Image (cartoon, rainbow, N blue to C red; front, side):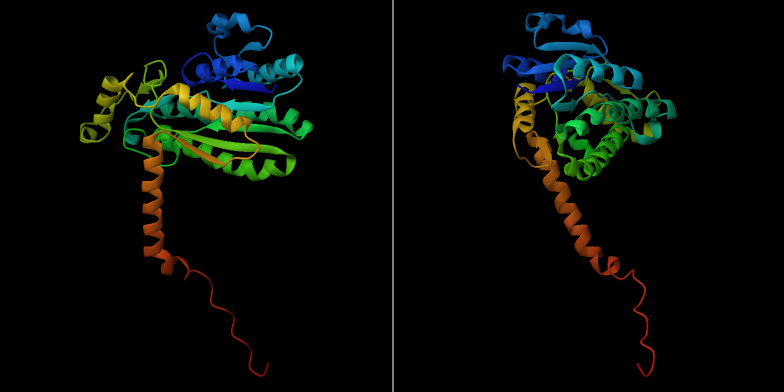
Amino acid sequence: MSVWFVTGASRGLGSEIVEQLLDAGERVVAAARDPHALDRLAAYDHRLLAVPLDVTDPGQADAAVAAAVDRFGGIDVLVNNAGRGLIGAVEEASDEEVRSVFETNVFGLLNVVRSALPAMRGRRRGHLINISSILGFSAKPGWGVYAATKFAVEGLSEALRVELEPLGIRVSLVEPGLFRTNFLDPSSVRLAGRVIDDYAPTSGRVRAWAGTHNGAQAGDPAKAAAAIIALGDAAESTFRLPLGTDAVERVQLKLAEVTADLAATRTVGLAMSFPEPAVAAGR
């Protein structure tokens, strides 16, 4: 049995991951702002440790990891799932709104990673699974600030991958598209407080869309959870895992755009070096 540590475990994708892991016989540390939201899983008490965790609090992250190590001896797989969203044009988002999303999605993830890595490094094994978003690979109108947080998660994950591989620790990046969770609920995603009429045809449409499509997303969270668990169980795997038809299509579209841009700018890009120094006469 492996020991899994899942943040944002009380609802949505995190809850689905926790329940499937417990059904499969794994040991699970379920971290949530309100661990009592996991009381429904009391029957699994011998294999479940529910811990309080606001990921923006480094002290809580340290305490949650310490409790996991004390109870189960270590952490084999860390799933950084906790996150929140913001919808609005980039210009519409206030400094406070932007910082709040970064505090959870980026600095919160870093808090948990910094807390968990010492024990993983000590054992020379472990697996970090960072839940990004397809918007962390290809941004869309209305999601600019949220996408920026997930782009940051992608960059951190790419660096962590090469830093931790020599220490026996794997890193994976999951890029879900739209799944039928509560992510579009007001408790998970906020609307920027400022509205600028000029953005009505772009970001404004996304605001309206979020209110009418909650609960109608095409992706099945149970299937996403199963794929993430398979990723954690696999002896070898790819670094990136796009999930959902929309995610796969957006990856393909962006790769085509980047390839076209590279072809169009390659000559200019390669012409930036200093000329070779002239060879002195007589040599």
